[in-house]
Length: 445
Image 1 (cartoon, rainbow, N blue to C red):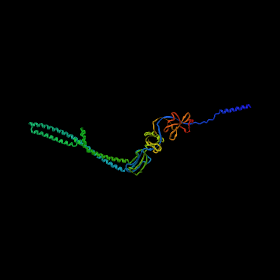
Image 2: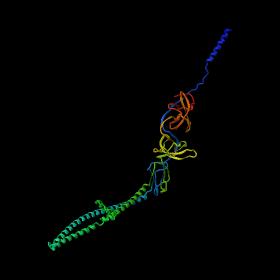
Image 3: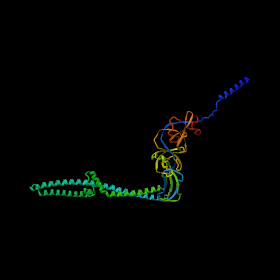
């Protein structure tokens, strides 16, 4: 009996030991596999991101300069054209007739100018000849004056000799006749000189309103100018008539060229208003063109950040995979009463014509200077749609993910730049964020 009792105690004791050694079951959670990125500093300038509509920067309405019929059309609505491309032809028959008449008039006026020029040149030559003739006559007068003075001196000496009986009356009379003859010759030379100097004297220069020059060449040129004034006026009149005729012909040529209707800008034909055969005058609009070489992007910016933007701020416009540089050119002076936003226009070069007016594009406006800033990949940040005011991310430490609120400074295409919340070198989750919770265990791939 005692052995049975001992055996029972041994069995009970073994069962107690077995239950005391058994551990309670633990619930095991599986870790989340993720990818991470390292928080880094990089040079960047703050930007404001928004969406804007593309609008044309320039518009051109094309009108003819004269009345005529449309002869041919080379452009239609929706076509892309370049500056100088032919859009249409107007009938030019009447202008061709006028051009031939104008050309004939020009040739006639050229002949009149040539005639007047020849007469003027001849007048200048005659004036020079007259001046040379005056010089020659003056030399003759000087010579005759010397001869007369010499004979007069001889006569006076002989007269004294005649008084004392040293010379006969006949001899004295002969000397006097020679002197009188020389005097007459001198008078004739002086008369010829006075005649030659008509229009070529100092008094003529003064009468024409000029001061008598001291230099001989200037003096002679002024005499030529005075004595050819009428011929010069005739030449000037002929040249003026030629210029008027030439101007008239140039105008007709211009009107002829303007019958070739050309595009004044690079752009798109927005509308064509005429057909072949229709009559068009200066008030008939033929085409409307929109410029596509450069465009505006119209953007509305929240009033809270509008003060950061000024005219001249750099901007980037993205449409699809294409990126264009632009600059803020126009800032609205007032805010929208409903939204509180203000509108600005960004001028963008569009030489490749990929920015089509009417489409929407993403815009980034630079509002500060480049400096080193903390940044993380865009996919690491949790936020509401287009709103980073309450942003957060998962900071990875020692195999666990911790939800961390951060203050966003600005956002670019691929990066989010932070004001605070992290430090350089921190690791953040960039994948499977929807599977993470604060404090959960993670495994970095």
